[in-house]
Image (cartoon, rainbow, N blue to C red; front, side):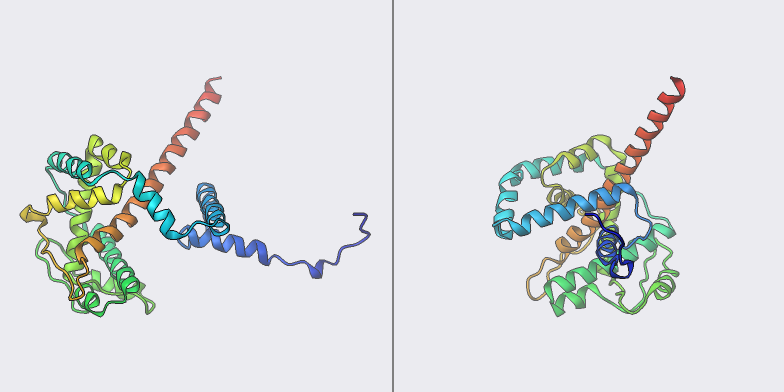
Length: 258
C-alpha cells in the first residue's frame, strides 16, 4: 500500500481479545487453553456461524436429528443387554463425592434456570446438610461455602443421590469395554444411558424414588440428562487428549528409532 508511517495509537486488539475470550469461555473459562480446545471451539464457532446465516430453524435441526436417531425398540434392547453386563458398582471416595455434590448443585441450577419451575426448585435445592450413612459428607458443606461466590446452590438429598446413582452407572460402564463401545457407537447416547440407568435403579443399592413435580416435570430424567452431558463431555475430552498424547509419543519414538 506504500505507507510511509502507521499511527499505532489507532490500532487496537479488541477483536483479538474478543475472539480469545470466546474461545476461553467455550473451554470452561480456563485461561491456559490447549491447542485441541482452540481447534474444537473454533469448529463450533464456524458451525454456529453457518447455522446463523442459513435458513434452517431449530425445529428443522431437531427434526433432522430425530430422523437419524435409533428407534426406541432398538434402544430398549441395547439398554437391556448393557444393563445385564454391569454387575458391580463402586462407592466414590471423599474427593469424588465432593465433585459429585458440586456437579449436583450445578445440575439443579441448570434445570431451574431452564424451566423456571418453583416446584422443581423445592425438590432440587435444600439448604440443610445431607446425612448419608455410606459416605463421609461432613466436608461437603464446608467446601461448597469456600468456593461459593454467591451463585452456587446446595443440592437436595434427592438430587445428590440421583447424580450419585448416575455416576455409579457410568463408572461401571467404563469398566466394561463392550458396554462402553456400545454406548459411544449409539446415535442417541444420552437416551441410551438414561434407559440403562432406569434398568439398574431397580437394584436396592441404587434405588432412587420416582418423582415428578406438580407441573409434571420428570425430575429424575432431567437430572440424568444434565449429569450425562457433563460427565460424557469430560470423558470424551480426556479420551481425545490421551489419544493425542499417545500419537505424539509414537511420533517421537519413531524419530528416535530412525
